[in-house]
Amino acid sequence: MSNPFGNTITPEAVIDTLGFFDDWEERYRYIIDLGKELPSMPEELHTEDREIKGCQSHVWIEPSVVEGRLCFAVDSDAHVVRGLLAVVLAAVNNKSASDILAFDMEAYFQKIDLLKHLSPTRGNGLRAMVERVRQVAQEAMHRAGARQSLAEEPLVS
Amino acid sequence: MTMNPDVQLADALPEVAFDVDVVRQDFPALHQRVNDRPLVYLDNAATTHKPQQVIDALVRFYSQDNSNVHRGAHTLSDRATVQFEAARVALADFIHARASEEIVWTSGTTEGINLVAQCYGGSRLKAGDRILVSEMAHHSNIVPWQMVAERTGAEVVPIPVTALGEIDQAQYQALLDERVKIVAIGHVSNALGTINPVASMVEHAHAVGAVVLVDGAQAVGHWAVDMQALDCDFYVFSGHKMFGPTGIGVLYGRQDLLEAMPPYMGGGEMIESVSFSETVYNTLPYKFEAGTPNIADAIGLHAAVDYLGALDRVGAQRHEEQLLARADSMAADCEGLEMVGGAPNRTGVLSFNLQGAHPSDIGMLLDQQGVAVRTGHHCAQPIMDQLTRSGTVRASFSFYNTQEDVELLFAALAKATLFLQ
Ligand SMILES: Cc1ncc(COP(=O)(O)O)c(C=O)c1O
Image (tube, rainbow over all chains, first blue to last red; front, side, top):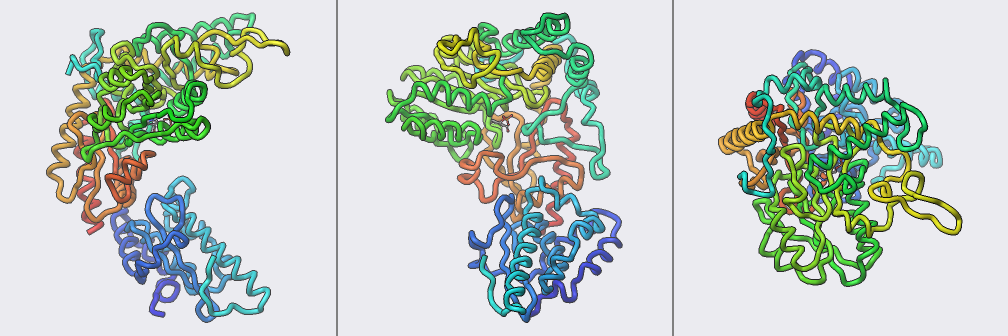
C-alpha cells in the first residue's frame, strides 16, 4: 500500500515538525496539508455504517487487516478535521492491534498541544474516531486470541 | 420601526446615552485573551455574558440572604421571599404582562415550551387537531410538540419558510383553519436572525381560535418585548440569553389559560392542601412551581432586568443595527461568502458559509484567532437541511460588541479563507 501514514509519517515526525513551528498559522497549515496527504477514500465508502455519529462534520472510517496489521481509511468533509484524522493515523495506521492499544493518544496530543481537539465537548468526531480505532483493535485482539493470528480480511463492525 | 409591534422600542428615557466603551466595562468576561488574542465574542445567540451587577447580585444573595422561600418563620427566609417575588414583579413589568401571576419561573425556554406542550396541549388536543410549527423553529420548539402530538393523536404541521429565511405568510394563512389549535413560532430565529411578524401572526391564529406560543429566547436580549402589544397566549425565554444567569427562565401565560391548565409536576409549593382523599392545588403561578425554585438565579435575572432598565436601550438597539448593517455590507464584499437567510428584517445574527469550506473549519480557524462563533445546524436542523449542506457559521452580536469586533471577524475570515484554498 502506498499509504505513508504509520510508515514514513510517524508520530515522532509529527511531534518534531509541530514542535518546530512557533505560530498557530504554520501549525494549522501543516495539519491541513497532512490531511491532504491522506489517500482518498472512494465516495461510495461514504456510507452511514462507516460514519462516526455525533460530529458537526462528516467523518468516515473503514478498517481492514493487511498482513496482520490494522489499516484505516478515513475521511472527512472538513479540512481541519481531515488533518487531525491524519495526525491520529500517523500513530495507528499499519500497526498491530496491541501496538494500537498500547499507544497513549492523549499524551501524543498533549505533546503537540492539540489536546483540546480530543475533548468530549468538541464534537469534531476526533475523539469518537480514536475510540472507534481502539474498539477495532480490541476486537481484532479477541479474534486473534481465538485464532492465534489476524486473518487478512475486511473488518465489518 | 417604532410603530412595529414586533419590535418594541423601550419607552423609558435613558439616564445616560449609550456608549459601547462604557458598557463593555460592565462585562468582565469580555476582557480576556483567548489563544493569545483579545477575545471577540460573537456567540451571543448561544448565551450572553453577564454584567458585574448580575454577578454581584448572586454573590450577595448567597453570602447574605440565602434561605428557602415561602416557608421559613425567620428573617432570612423573609428576605429571600421578598426578593424572589420582587423579581417576578420586575419580570412582569419587563415584558409588560398584566399581572405577576402570569409569570411562571422555569429553568429556561426549553422547560417553558415543554410545560405548555404537556399541560395545555396534553389536556386540550385530540386526534385530528393540528399544531402549526415554524419550519425554522429551534428543536426545543419542535420536539415537545411532536411528543404531545404522539400522545394525543394531534398532528404537527410545518409552516413553510422561504429561501430568504422568512415564514411564508401566504402559506401560513392558508394552513389556518378550525383544525389548528396551537401555533408555535419563534420571535427571532436563532439560526438566521429573522424577526417574525409575530403580532400579525397572532391575530390570524386567534381568528381561527388557535392559541399562540412565541419562543422569545432570541428577542429578549435585543429589545423590550411587550406581551400586551403582541397579544400572544404564551411567551417563553431564558435568562442566560439576556445577560442573566443560566438555569432560570420565564413562561408568560395568559392568566385564564394558565388557570385552566393542569399542573406540570407535583410536589411541595404547588399545593394548597394535601390529604389522601383530596389534594388542592395552589394558585397561580405556584401551581406550576413544584419544589424549591431557583431562587438565586431569579434574583440574578432581576438584576439583569434592572441593568437593562438603566441602559439606553434605544441607543443600544441602534448600535446593534449599525453592527449588523456593517457586517452585512462587509459580507456582501467578501468573496466566496454566501449568506444563508439574510432577510431584511433581522436582528443580531449573520449566518453564512464560505465557498469550499466546511463551517467547522471556519469555526476552528476563527477560534485560533480569538473569534468565538458557533457553527453547525444551531439546533434548527429542518431549516438548515433545507437551506444548506452542512449548516452555517453564525456570528451573533450583542450591544456590547464593537465595530472593531466586526472588522476583526472579517479579517479572521480572510485569513481562514487563505488557509482553506
Ligand atoms: C430560539 C431558541 N429557542 C430555544 C432555545 C433553547 O433555550 P434554552 O436552552 O435556554 O432552554 C434557544 C437557545 O439556543 C433558542 O435560540
